[in-house]
Image (cartoon, rainbow, N blue to C red; front, side, top):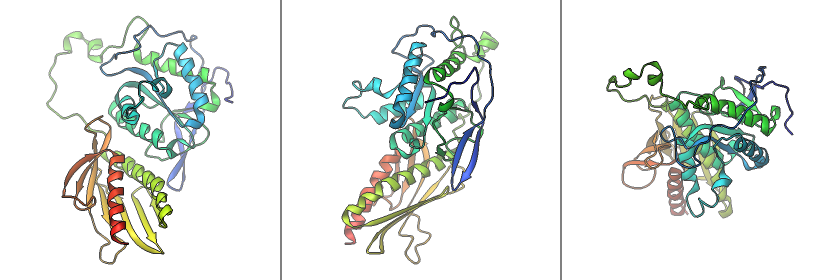
Length: 358
């Protein structure tokens, strides 16, 4: 059970203590007095969007083991008039649809804040990991403050996913109702007062300046190297999860992961029958290098494809622009793929290679 606190909020910068290539996230305690008690936000339509594409005040992401705490928080937020994206509210609407693609759209564009309830199970599961990946791109575009982490226990978090100076709240310090109050204050501060919706900063300074021309420059893109680290971590996670399937047909597997490389091997009777290396370079565009059969003498520097992070063509979230030479076994060329789509194609090509080496 979360322990109650008396008018104090436990949050602060994240302290990361290295454990291998993972970090323990800990919150520092800072005391704050309570402002006035919360009341419902001004009524807004349940459907449609404000602020361009914004449809929700909050979008919750969590591992199923902690649904009880999250659902109580969601109900408390409802009572305070906040619009919360919560998976079970969409059960009927998403029946028969690709719910992962729909979730990416919400976490990547259509919510004011993304609230991940990060537990030990969170990044070990595909769905919450995918949700966090979609939110990270938006967080970098908006310049911080978009992701509001809530820690459950003492989870191990990759440093590139949660910056060491990120402020966090801890579930153990807040009942669901207290957490909902903190979220209400955040939403209220971003949406303006009950009678005055948020305005563009240009309107606040001077309405007459809104039409001044802007330089013809491309908007700054999120840091490609950080996105590259995220993609490498995701590919490594997917390989580590899926390769054990091969044990059913008498094969053995290993996946070694670091911050700069993923090394995957498949063996049969002690002999390597498939090898895939993925290396992260220090290039500014975040290039990844893919090499097949580097275990073979003279093939240690093989590069069968290069890839870099880009915007997905369908939902605008993080994707991979692959310049394929021979990784996927087809004609050389460029492809834009979601991370899971890339892994599926690598998997099918791996199966073909394994069957040809029987």
